[in-house]
Every structure is written in structure tokens, then in C-alpha cells.
Length: 431
Image (tube, rainbow, N blue to C red; front, side, top):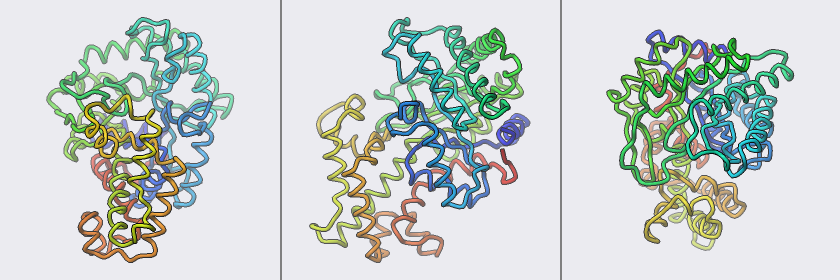
């Protein structure tokens, strides 16, 4: 992974460079990321999470090999060379099997790691921080590190057996609160202390050495900590560099390492730039991308209602709401409050639980109907100004086509551009 290693070296030498990690399985989000990366000449890091994709299919129904093939096929259609796409696995460990005993969960996790590596995923986040059914509620750093090292052994062996060489790069540690946005309302967010971060690193280094992985330690490129960024349903905790200055100084002791910042969705452009300067050189984004996708689709549905007879409309918003009510498992434990509070959260929450419902057949059919209806119409500029003002300006300036597909991709790319401007990876970087 020469490209990422060079980027980290530049960051540690004082350059304000980083890389965006796109954590999404939605094809429109991935298409938006691919086409933007091609336009800017950048490498693209795409990560699948352990709940999305696993050896049993995850909630997407995809194994790691399935995810790789779909992404590569999409890259081919977008004209992006496969060598410019880096595949990563996020929160790989026993997360999916916390209800089992530690021995059972770790056996599944070993298979999970092996399937990711065999499928060509090169950036591996080892996360064994979650307690299993026979564990104490909170695991010590030593236990977490020991389990992570055990998985690294599997990863190294699989990579060598499959590809004849070991070129994996690793990320360790985890963030608090849980990934994907806080489940409860945010009140106060504690930044990881430098002492805690250093202890985690040293526990992992010792575990790697015990497992005969001392020479692999130089390929552990990042530590996940909590820099003081998070979001819940309606609020965002913004990054404050002063609170993380101790972390930024501490990571300088480890020349080959930076921080990986999770849950950076919805931060300001200035915050992304400061995060990169403070050595949070890997910025992960997920829900903000599907949030932008949802914004675009709801706006297009509003335009559709103005142009198409009611009987022919897609009713996308109504179909989504009905589907979520009939199948509440993805949002019910996350959204609290009055019936109206929960209704608003289902449609507009920053945590964007709606992203789990786009693959549903009825929802997908409504989406297809929406696009078919609008492709037969010329969207009047005043309506575009009303519902998609950023895209309206680009259409007026001749930078963007007013077809629905282009409008959707551009709305998602608006989020990605904030990251790109902060990270500024150079075109010449390659794997």
C-alpha cells in the first residue's frame, strides 16, 4: 500500500494531506465517489463494515468478494482504473457475534478476516473492543490487543497464501460512542487522552510481538481514537483542535502512524482541514453521504409532485415511510420521543437509518418510477432553484446537466468535496 504510506509520511512531515474513507455500500454513493475521484485524479479508499458485509452476507447480502466485484464493475463503468481503488474493511472483529461466547465469536471473526483478505481488501481495521456474552462488560486493553493480534496472524497467513506476499496495512483501536452516530442524545463527549491512546498502542505492539508479528508493526498505520467529533439525530459535536492537542503531539512519537477519525460526518469544512493538520489523516464518512442522497431524492420527489399527475407519481416519501413502519428493526431502537419526533427522525435524522431501506423492492421501484417520470420532463429552472439551489447554480453556469441522475450524484459529491479539499491527495499517488 505504497500510496497510503507515502501520504502518511507527508502528513507526518508537516504537509496538510490526508485521505477520505468512503464507508457506504449504496451504488449511487459509490458512483458519486468514483466519478469525483476520476475527475480529480485521486486514489479512492472505499470501506465495507463488518455489519454490511461478512462471510454470511451481512445486511447487504454481500460477501467481501461480492462487494469487491460490484465495486470494480462500477469502477469499470465509470472509467476508473481498478488500481486507483483501495478496499478496506472496517471494525473487523467479533462485533456481529457479541451474543455468542468469546471463543465462538472469535472463530467467526477469524473467518471474517480471512474472507476479507482473500477478496483483496488491503486496509484492515482490527477492532476487538466489544464484549461477548461471557466477557466482562468492559474489556482491558490487553485482552483487546491479544484478540486483535490473533486476527492479524490470520490476515497475514491468508494474504501470503492467496497472493504470495503480505502487503496489508492495519488500523487498530476504536471510537466512543459506537460507530454510525450516537444512539442517544449527546450531552458531553470525552476526547481520548494521550495516555490512553499510548497505552492502547503499546498493548497492541506487545501483543503483535508475542504472536511473532514484530515486523508487521510498521504496517500498523493508524489508531482510532475519539477526537471530539460526533453526531446524534439532530446535533453535531464540532471538532475543537485545542482539546485534541495532546493527541496530536503524542502521535508524533510514532513516525509511521496517524490517527483515523470516525464519525466525521457533518463537520464543517474548516474542521476537516484542522483535523488533517492535527494528524487525523484518515477521515471516515458514511451516513452524511446517504443523508445527501436522501436530500436529493426527497427534493426530486417534491419536483415530481409539481410536474406529474398524482396518480402517476412515485410517492417515494410515502413508500419509504410505510416500509419503515412495517419493518422497524433498523430504526426502532435508535429513535425515541413522541410519534411525531420519531416520524421526523425516520425521514431526516443525521443518523440516517433510512439508508437501510433503499434496497427494499417497493422502495427501489418507487425510486425507478421517480427517475423515469423526471427523465420524461424538463425540470423548470425555478423548481430546481427552489429544491436543489446548489445544483441550480451549476446548471445555470453550464457546469451540470439537469437530468435527475446527474443532480443526485452532484448532491452526494458536495459532501465529498469538503473532504477532498481538506485532504488534497495528489494525483501521482498510487498503490
